[in-house]
Image (cartoon, rainbow, N blue to C red; front, side):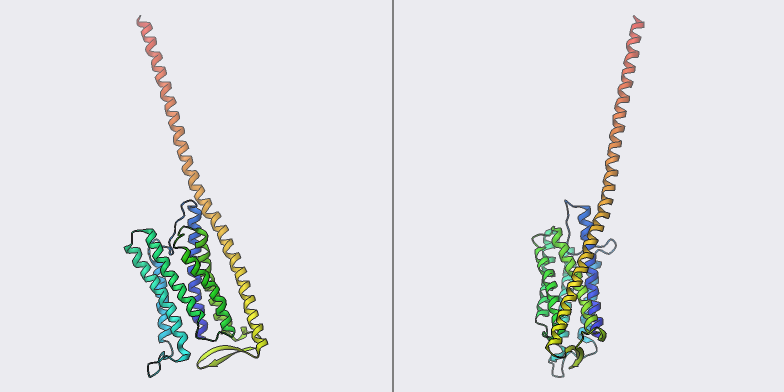
Length: 309
């Protein structure tokens, strides 16, 4: 149960951040297509660093749960039990994300250069994603079972997040790169939630497999090689379906968001344009009225000279 809640909670955090980034990137690009400029994180109106504060709070809570939950992280002699290594690995990922958010906030307060701030922030995020990829690649849990296959597919998504974050250093204003990175972060969240639900809910375990308690850790085992291959194939199909569904959702969000924000931007532009045109017309009318007044006055003067003569 703890594994289910941990994966779903962490995944939901990634899902929220990814969607928040997608929304803001689409909005900024629609409003400023020629002057698109964005950082890795987005300030909020009342609390500028709310996103970073949220990441720090969530990662700190998760880190403390992994280290000081309902288990003793160390043996009596100070060594780490082999069945508790995954707690250290998970807490290390949380710590790297906490470091990213903490220093990003400090950099925003102390660094006036937007270009430098963007480069260092993307560097910090790339370190976090790189460490996440490393720890999942050399994860202490079984790499040959169903859980290992879920983690292998997760590594593909993390790799996309890492590459697009690194590309954000030389290309900070590339909308497509930022869009793909945000999508990969969102999908990390989706896949983590899927892992939590599908691996630790007995009724979702593939046919021929079962949950087994090994050294205090629940793992999915299968009856024979054929059952394992079938389970891994089902996980791959599941991954592809989630890719198709989430991609359709993200592109729909882009199309709808672009239409809404572009429409609002055009309304403001046309209103401003109409105001300028109205001012120009009023100015022309004033000039013509002044010319007519000067012409009439001139005629009266000429007539006065005639009568005087």
